[in-house]
Image 1 (spheres, rainbow, N blue to C red):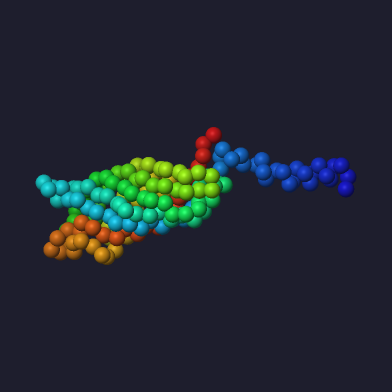
Image 2: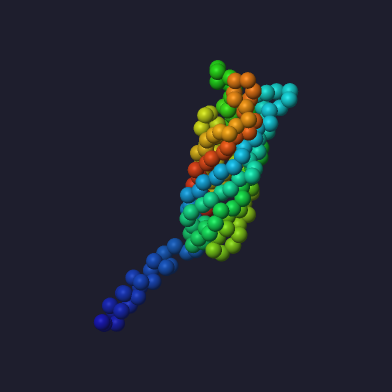
Length: 169
């Protein structure tokens, strides 16, 4: 092998290592979140209230910052406020809301604690987003309340989420 061929081979081998520096790496993971969600309708206005998710678990598979493997499930909780959306058929589980979620991601490099603002829309099934999570979710039995004789105040919360983390230089 000539010196020129050796240099070319070395450049081709080392080029991918330097092509994307770790400071710009992105993490991507698929997650499930399961737990109990509670709704607390306001005593003076049933069209508004508070919500909380706890206890819950977030279980992700993938990479956190492009190189950190996610190792195991972490805890997940959240709380905030909601407003019921008028539907013409009642206001049962037709909400728009916001709040904060608090969760742990355990990686091969560190235990990462995230607190992020969150917003959601719920109309039978729902969607929510944070700066790092994009999810669809549904509420399933067992529930407290039936939407006919009393509002739903507790249900099983099941979400499918994508976790995306991008580092900035």
